[in-house]
Length: 347
Ligand SMILES: *Cc1c(COP(=O)(O)O)cnc(C)c1O
Image 1 (cartoon, rainbow, N blue to C red):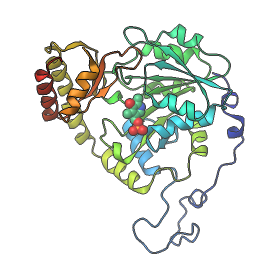
Image 2 (image 1 turned 90 degrees about the vertical axis):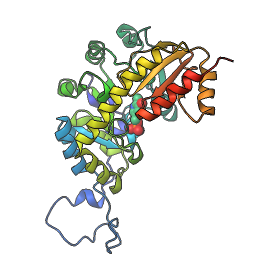
Image 3 (image 1 turned 135 degrees about the vertical axis):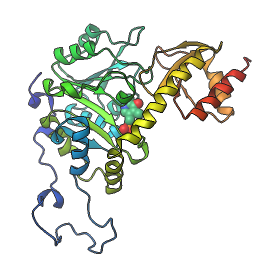
Image 4 (image 1 turned 180 degrees about the vertical axis):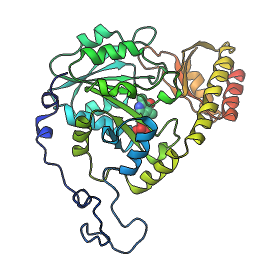
């Protein structure tokens, strides 16, 4: 890995970050707070929230086995993705490399930040070719974006391929693990300490069932996390979100019950789909959605929509022609989908 000083944008490396009232006062024994120009009358919400979300992080730290100072929390994973661009990539000069197809936000954030976005197509098994990924990099490539399990393909990238890329690339490798809870293999957090150039992304939006509160997670070296913290808005996670996250994270068993139902439903949905003449291919899924190839995907998509059932039409995406992405729903929702698909008649 190159020195962090070489990878981080110079203006960010030299940034003197905003110091909030709550940053300066840290845990001393105080009961009178006249430092932040807040309304003193207690409305539950009159005080600024903890800018570093200490309690959420210590809860997550125990669940994930990662030190709290190696955790960044953002307004969704989207904030973490955007910050990676803003911390590492100088607009109009640097570039990033990503697999294709993958999650659309990497490209949008690259475009917003005026950073060149280079795509390397996955192979037929939706796996990255390590040599092609590395050969697409040059001295201005600051980060490689991988997503495992990948969206919209649904599959895990092979761990050896990911680790080869992390090992051989001298810049940052981002592995988005938004769907890792649905996968049969464990997260790369267990090897985080071995790779100072690795950033892992997770989220409360999928398995944890908290998409509405907007909380994304990045795991990385303490040094990388400290730069992300300097660039983020001082109070990026509001108190309602912090409270709701803590409550949910303390109830792992509730999450596990839902997770198991989704996994069982995934298996039965795969079986049902495979029996439909309409369905030409079911791609292996390690996530909470299934990518299928059908004849005339756009017609099928429209038919389902006309019947009040929305799936994701991915038929215009690289390697996904005539593909629909179907999220695993409740048993009732999945039954409704299968019923509709059984009744589908080709025009
Ligand atoms: C859904 C998803 C996320 C989650 O984004 P949030 O902003 O945390 O809701 C992240 N990455 C991928 C690949 C996803 O599909």
